[in-house]
Amino acid sequence: METSPTPVSLAGIEAAREIVYQTLTPTPLAEYPLLNESLGLRALVKHENHLPTGAFKVRGGLNFMHHFAREDSSHRGRGVISATRGNHGQSIAVAAARYNVAATIVVPHGNNPEKNAAMRSQGARLIEHGDDFAAACAEADRLATAENLDFIHSADPHLIHGVGTYALEIIETAQARGLTIDAICVPIGMGSGLCGVITAFRALSPTTKIYGVQAINAPSYYLSWKAGHIVNTEAPQTFADGIATSRPAPLPFEIIQSGVDEIILVSDAEIAEAIRLLWRTTHQMPEGAGAASTAATVQRRHEWHGQTVVNVFCGGNLDTETLRKVFAV
Image 1 (cartoon, rainbow, N blue to C red):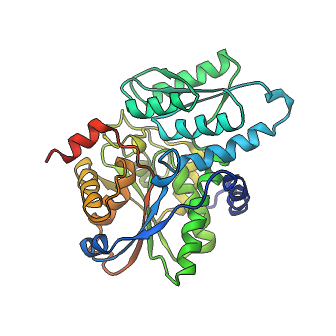
Image 2: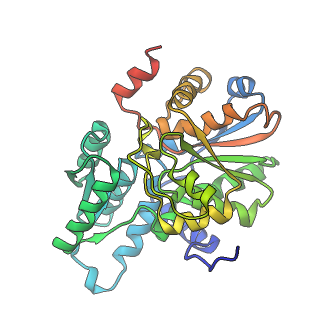
Image 3: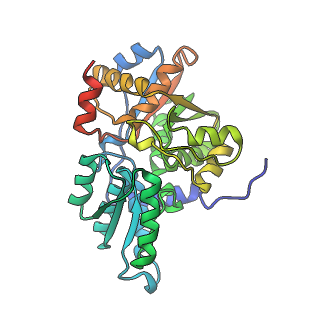
C-alpha cells in the first residue's frame, strides 16, 4: 500500500539533535551480563530513564518549544496546553519553563500523583479532569479554544523529531561497538518514540526488526495495525500508564502501519515480572511502560535466542504505591 510522505523525516531528527543537545546529553546504551544470562540473548538497554524528567519525552518537548518560541508574533505571549498521563506533560512543563512559555497540563482523575507533583514543581498549571486520557484530551482541547492557548498533541512532528534523537544514539553507539542490532522493542503510548525509531532505523539500520509493544488490555495500536485502519478501544486497564492508550492518532498510526514489523502484546503480570527481573539483574527501576520492552523480550526469548535486541527503557517514573504492589509477591 502506497502512502503519502509524512512530515516526519530523518533530516528532521538530525536537525533536532542540535537543539536537544543544548540541554541534554546522550543516554547510555548499556549491557548487563545477568540480564543477558536470564534472557539467553544480548540485551542492549537504552536508558531514557536517566534523563532529567525520568523519561524520553523531554527530548520532544525541547524541540517543539524551540520551534514554538520562534514562531511569528501571533504566538507571542500565548501559552500552551496539552493532555497527558505524565511523561509528555513533564516534557512540556520543563521545555516551556526553559523558553519562558506558560504551560497548562490536563490529566485524568486518579493520575499518578507523583507525576502530577513533578509537573506542578516544573511550573505547569495542572488541571485534573475526566476518568481517562481521552476525557483529559477533550478538556484540553476545550480550554485551548476558551483561553486562546496552543494545543500540543503528543504526536506533533516536532515532538517525534526530538524523541527520535535517541534512535540515532542507539544506531551510532552500536556501530561504534561493531554491533549489528537484530531487533528493537519500543513501548507504544501515543507512538512518538516508535515513530522516531522507525524513521531513523529504516534509513540507517534497515535490517533491524522493529517491534512495538502494547499492554494486552490497552491494545488500540495493535488492533489498528491488524485491521489496517484506526480502531478505538474502551478505557485501558493497565497499571503501565505510559502505554494506556485508547485512541491512536492518525500521523503515528500511518508511520507505524507502514514501518513496524510487529506489535507485541504483554500482560500486566508480564510487565510486573519484567520490572522485578530488571531490578534483580540491572538494579534499574523502569516504570511499567519502560519495562514493557523487556516483557516482550522475555516473551520472545526462545525465538530470539542469541540475537542482539535493544530494549528501550522509555521512562522510570514508577510511583511508590505501584512499586509496592509490584514487589508484594
